[in-house]
Image (cartoon, rainbow, N blue to C red; front, side, top):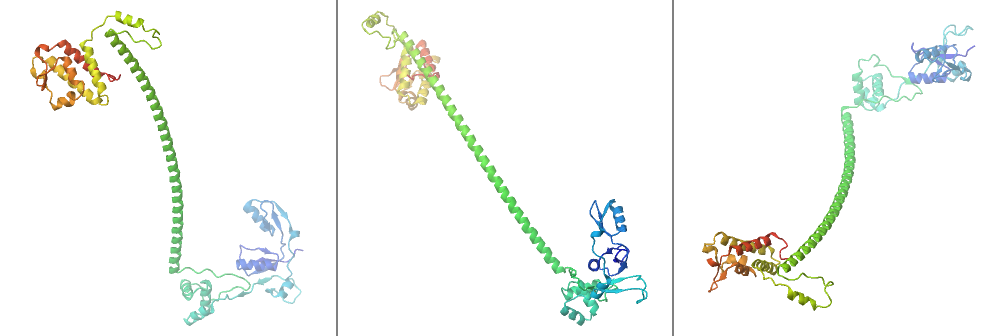
Length: 424
């Protein structure tokens, strides 16, 4: 025969089988159910193999199968707790058990009731006395204090105002004797809500400030990193520019060296050409000269001597002028252009005396031509002569020689156009 069990009959949806008085007491504390009926239905211990859920009866296992589809169970009833001993529990005074039917008869018991002891909850006595002085019944005041959390008289009065239409407002509240049920937390007042909201806002503000500080640190790190990269890029660019300038200077030096070599060769060629025009023998290298100097004068004496032409004299005069003022290139070039203007005016207007007469004391003439050694000498080679009083330099009409003046113009233009004129 199966052992005695307790079945919760408080509601139609419960019907839980309990194996012991301890389980019934725990069930009552959790659900506030207080009606338990004696049952002879066997308390099984069926464990679902799929989800390991324990089922206490066939009915419970069938409901589990309908809900989850799990149909396999393992019967571990032999490992279950011992059945309930009703007489032993009755003698302990945990609860009261009443049987329906003839009390002392030997007939079989038809029902069993397990009643959990209920007590009035404890409330703040001082607050309760204040509510009683205000005219509230004890039951209503006790219920209001219990459900408002024993916080204050104002909270209890607010609770009463909100629940004054409840049917059980004047009934004394009851809780299980050995339960440790904490009273519900009271609702916050308007002031408390404002303080709570202010606290939440302050917390959110601090969190936002911390996040902004963190983001600022990240941005600062990024700026530092970008700054370092820019400095490195600038350094590399400066290094490349320095290398480029060095290479460019090296190329310029090489080009300058080649240009000087070319000029040197050109000067040597010009010098040889002048010696040829003057009827002088070409220069020979020192190594090629014969050890005996006697035959050389004999050869020179046999060569015809050519007279120096007017054009060559003009060229040498211009070359001397350039050498005498080698540090004044701009002034020398201006003198050449001024002389070319004087010669050109005489060639174009030979009958005009004003173009053939120049005042030596003229400041412009002195700055451009007269102040340079060789300037007046070049005009004299062209045909100009100083007057007796030394105030003017004048070219008579009968001394105007177009060929000489044209030669002078060519030599002046060559000196102006050739940047290396008179270097050596």
